Length: 144
Length: 81
Length: 254
Image (cartoon, rainbow over all chains, first blue to last red; front, side, top):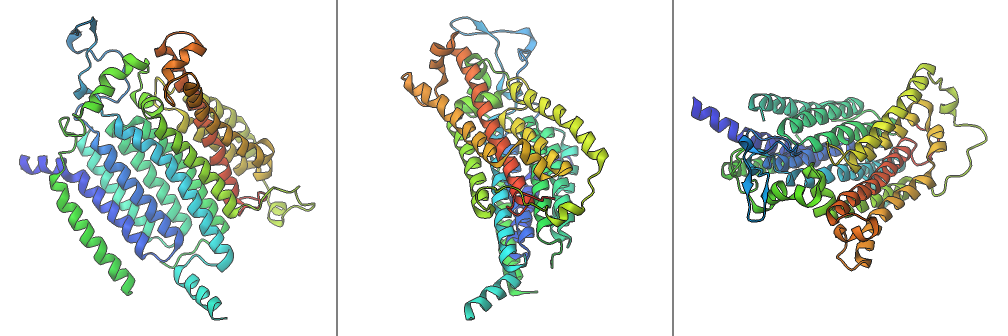
């Protein structure tokens, strides 16, 4: 039982990320409504960002803001020049994925804005957000 | 990291994603997407990524929900699927 | 079921199956010794970046200093996205408001209580946003978050007392000017570094202008570039809302 639980904890996150990613991908391909496609895109994007952030998680680690109390057991770390507080890298969460994904979120909302603007423009021209109706109207326009 | 909390939030996340995609009212869909963003924000705070969680709370749950609702208001609320 | 849905389902199942199979090779969740966590780079950032920059928040230090190029071009992407939205949906320069207001606006009864409450809340939001920007070195926050909050305070005005009221405070021209100014502040900091003989965005040399030591110069110039980011993000968030909520007409609104 313990073996199974350890396995579940170790991998469950990744399974859910894959499931979320596939939900988003399915929506982007198969949904008929343009806004629904964008919702799918958001879900896909957040699943990838979740995966990145979860790479940097460390067990029993603190958040990546140093307080000056990281010195374990009051000990100091003697380098060749002088003593300075030694921070064990295992006790602080990995900051690199956070940095990469922080900007990705803000850029994501601006690209979502561009996509919504295009959707509004499409609605202005074809008076519909459904893919099949738009395609029918495009073909009607071409035949004239 | 608290693994039991993590698993519960992840299951809620999948439920929210499925609801956001299956509901036929686009306004409800964008609201559920806001809930999804807040759940993700909780998840990141729990993983120790406080900066990312803060950004998601401000951007994903705040601004992107508002601009989505603005678009739904300006176009149409009904969806066929 | 339509053939398109069937094809999509097939693609998703095959891709998802392959990805699920691949997860068995990934390191365990939360493993401190996984390749990404035990790499020299992340160990260096955790152990040494505070000595070099004096910033306790590692995310801010890496974001604004070590990965300055990345953040700068993300800011440029946001700026370009704002311009793209304006050119897709906007109708050029905003003319003077129509003699008779749009019908939907005329009939709308704005609730007095929400207007007054939001007038009280907006300054608090803005002060908190400035705190988030300025305190990003010590706590979660920084230019992106603070900029979004500043922008959303203007969005709140537009939601409660109408878009024209918000555009009086932050017109389209002013928003574009501020967005450009933000990118200019960021890139200008880099160019000053170049003019003093270092690489682009190598802040250490700026101590010749600002006084103090090189470490202090890095600390201070991080705040400068965060302010630049905040300007751009604030202006573009408001532009996105203003354009999308009015179909580019820049009047009426929700």
